[in-house]
Length: 550
Image (cartoon, rainbow, N blue to C red):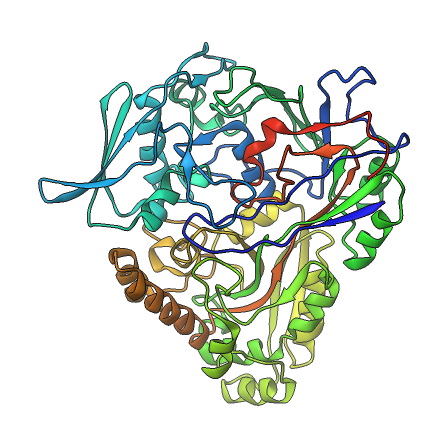
């Protein structure tokens, strides 16, 4: 056994986090479907969920959804694995586009590389990808009727095919490269889909996806597994593995037994914080990878429905929440408390010191919470029902903390897809939610805290589950400036406004960890779920069945 740890810096608009891989495996560890003759293995991955929402990149809202998206699709530009300060590198685009002015408007002209293939789908033959596919993809991503991430593309005016190998994007107003390039990256709405398959499948495209990524969809057994096959026509090279067998294993005991018993090659650890990692640490033939920067966990308040519609109530509840309990549950190896909506650990983030000095930390204070709740008109508290994924310890912590101030939280436990449906109604009063890594704070501010992004009644519904709209003017101003210093100042003001209104209480920054057989490698970048750049080199993933130790 050996633990692999990697330090990563996060800076710049193209920031990403990647983890350097190491190889080596003992004889009793799993071989990942590869034989002793080193034939291409099928990598077996156990994920701690009961299923997915969609494999369509514009509908991929769960971490595992996004991971699958990065394996099936690709972007015009790509995050560079292993170098968090590096600029974007070309993907489907031949080179990184530069802005120009045409007829008084900012225009980005994108030249496509040749040789990018759309593989065959169940209803469509294989063909060469062209500008038609790119234009279709970007328009689809910008359309709130088809995309969860449409709010990211509101600065787009027109997307046009100049010729089969060239795309032109005209903006409503000038934006910086830091704002534009993430919209065409290999992440969420920037992922390019194959137009013919998307049109042929219609509403079922998320069940039968076809994209130009390193792997092809083979099958999906809901509640059990998804199988991917290598796309040997992938433009960056033939994958080193034959494919992936991704298994939904929400039960910690079963998943761990499968890893140690040789039925899995990679698996999420048990939900017991540091103890779960210690179990993997102790087993010969297996390794723990602690990968920096997964995202930030929050308590989100519904600002439109029920008692939490009053900011005075939200502030009271924020004081009743003890971050330390959530950190202890998640494990101190993979959770660090944070005070900022978008912390300094993330690109463009605001330091905790600023939040503390501004008096917006909402440090744990039960007596103050009770006093504020009474002043808000609830001296005896109130009852509330929340929907939670089954076995979510964090909701049990929330329930116990709220009880201390007289707020009776009833938990309705459901499977993950049902929970996703519930929070998309905009009716949930309290939500514990992860906002995963983004290359700039403008994206999470727009997706989660911008009125038009509200899942209930928003013009461009995204992931604003609580309906907050108090920082709209600041968010719009920040989106329209190309001055980096002004933008940074506006991001700080947005952060402060969200905290002043208690739309959310930041809890901790999460650092993903997982267990794997010693011989598993991503070819230079170990993955952490849902962070740009970490799954894009998955075509280099393989298992060294000849390695003897970690």
